[in-house]
Amino acid sequence: MLFNKTLISIGAIVLGMTTSLVNSSPSSSDNEKFQSKRSTMLSKVFGKRDCNFDCGSNGIPDCDSRCQNSGVDKFLVSACVGGKCYCGFDPSITLVTQIMPKVIGTHSGHFHCDEALAVWMLKQTKDFQGASLVRTRDPSKLAECNVVVDVGGVYDPAQHKYDHHQRGFTETFDDKHATKLSSAGLVYKHFGREVIANLLKKPETAEDVETIYQKTYNDFIESLDANDNGISAYPNTLTPLFKESPTSLAQRVGQKNPSWNETLTDPEVDERFVSASDMAGSELAGFVEAMANSWLPARSLVVDALEKRDQVNASGRVIALERSCPWKEHLMDLEKERGLEGDNNILYVLYPESSPEGNWRIQCVPTRPQGFENRKSLPESWRGYRDQELSEISKVDGCIFVHAGGFIGGNKSRHGAYEMARLALEL
Ligand SMILES: *[C@@H]1O[C@H](CO)[C@@H](O)[C@H](O)[C@H]1NC(C)=O
Ligand SMILES: *[C@@H]1O[C@H](CO)[C@@H](O)[C@H](O)[C@H]1NC(C)=O
Ligand SMILES: CC(=O)N[C@H]1CO[C@H](CO)[C@@H](O)[C@@H]1O
Image (tube, rainbow, N blue to C red):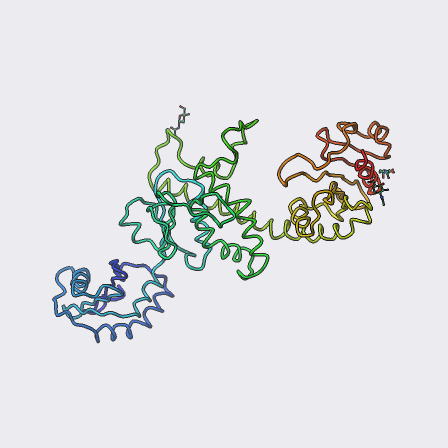
């Protein structure tokens, strides 16, 4: 092949790892790049130490080990020319590492969401884009990988080793988070900003990228870390009132593993893994896109509504959004920023269902973003009634409904919703 044309063949030991250039399969443009550098490289090699060994029957592998034994162990190039070994230490050999496709390593066998997502995220980075995947628990094979996730017992970002199973591992996302990281959180911690920047096609330093980086850890990644490390969302002294639907991302990834009575070959399981990894990745990408295109821009609507709140009611405790949008977290963040807490916080949010001329909703602000407890629920006497009956009870014309849970209601007009809020404040 490339270097076997004449009597010249060349091998490389990169960081102590024997790699035969001839066996690597760079793309044709890589080949051209390599070809153009080849003569410089060879001339440099020949200028270096001549080991004075015969190549032996194995050619390059013999030269590799002889050159290595002669004391050159880093970026070593060996060549077999005219039956003699030549050894050289040459920085241009880094060309080899650039051309060789990168390899991501993770464990074989049963897979989980954390490494499925970690592998997908790595593939979105400049360093590991286009990398191939090896699933193995064989340490010598893992040693040949450029990055290893979820196996190997080592966490060392400098060496691109991202396992979290070893005793003594306590890494969290930052000092504000207590959840121990899984391989998803580890890779996210080190590459997440780049992944988000690439998904949003913005520079890593953009403010939106930072906001969504933090938000995505909190809302998407942290639960995967907790799930993989066996951390419950609530203390074990509490009994959940019901079971969660078995459709979380971690569960759906888990279901892609072979079932107990299915016998699959390793390549078949690898294929399942890749499909799970793609699924987890496309959900992450969808989440990030929704955050960037829907959640984040909604903040400015909440800002506007807060600024105009005195026009809705002099108490300042009701806001009206021009459009229905995700408001809860933004409102709570903005209240904190502006010191609108305690007796000054917002109790009701009004917004049109579709157009300002159509039906309007009145919704209670909950005590926390996820949860159904309200700061001030709609009046008990209104709950569960509809239409005319509700209008008679509430003395507000055009009422449509008040949910039995007391957290949301509707009126056929903006003014009607304002009236419901005004009365509810007092009741
Ligand atoms: C597993 O067992 C069930 C029940 O006997 C059977 O219907 C199913 O086909 C089995 N799956 C495989 C892959 O053998
Ligand atoms: C605001 O609500 C209060 C009751 O909290 C009510 O007395 C007042 O009339 C309302 N103001 C406006 C401008 O609607
Ligand atoms: C109090 C109030 O303005 N209620 C309104 C609710 O919506 C209907 C339909 O537009 C109006 O007729 C009501 O006046």
